[in-house]
Length: 101
Figure 1: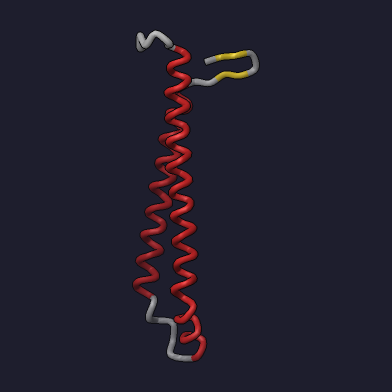
Figure 2: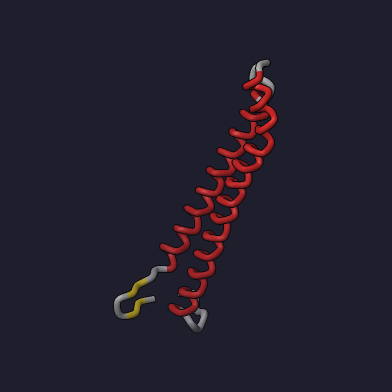
């Protein structure tokens, strides 16, 4: 769709939606790696007062970190969905009769 001063290609929106999905997948993998590291190393904090204090704080710290991952993943999902919806809208504007070509 092209208007004076504005041009959109449906294929560009489709590509950006795919990229957003790939970025989401990358964040999910990073979250899984970090989760595994927390699970693996949780009990290696040390047997001193510093380790004990960190162990008390760790559940809240973990929750904050993984909540942030979830927000990021949700945002990428929303971004991809919005781009796909826009691609559909611009596709309809380019081909209002639905001839497909």
